[in-house]
Length: 129
Image (cartoon, rainbow, N blue to C red; front, side):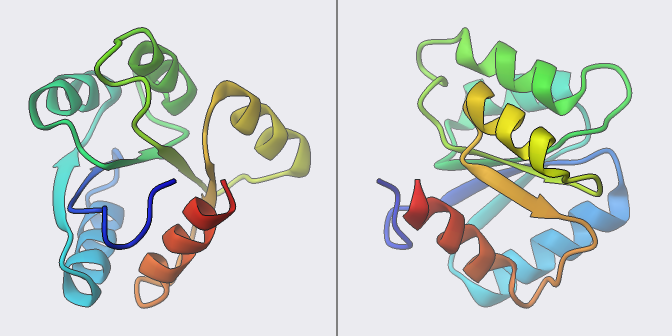
């Protein structure tokens, strides 16, 4: 199980620059985590392979390769398939949350999120999984 002590590097994947900026400010401002950014599923796969983050926060709806497809691709790579993934989405209906968890996501953070509580939200999800 991942705890606050073990998270050193987070890969944050979202096609929206404002979301990436807000989340990065919240995470780096309130924790000692280093946040790497990616704006697409393809970039996420490349960066994940390069940096081997402790956690991936992945937008569900992105042009090109969406979050669920990106998660599926991550699961195919042995060195990446045990990195915890938390989806970030504006649409988090119960059946979707259950589907994402069946796919291997640890949980969901809904947009809009509060950057000040984002680290606690992440810890809450990881402590339950």
